[in-house]
Length: 69
Image 1 (cartoon, rainbow, N blue to C red):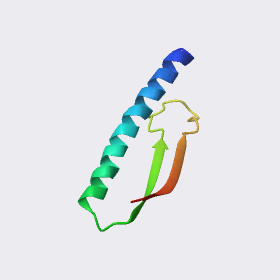
Image 2: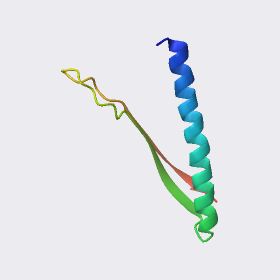
Image 3: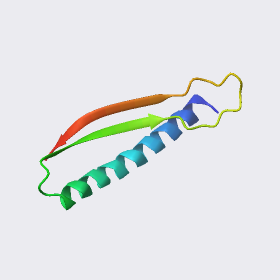
């Protein structure tokens, strides 16, 4: 797979995640008007089942932040 194809796949996944995450957080705040802020954790994790031995190091990336109303 070329780097261009990889980049397109990465951007497609991130765009889809961003849209769904935005909708989910807005809906959560709308259902809970008494909440003044929420603390969120976003994790990106490689869940590939590798058959190689030794197994490649799996990717994991996490960010945490606060969303204020």
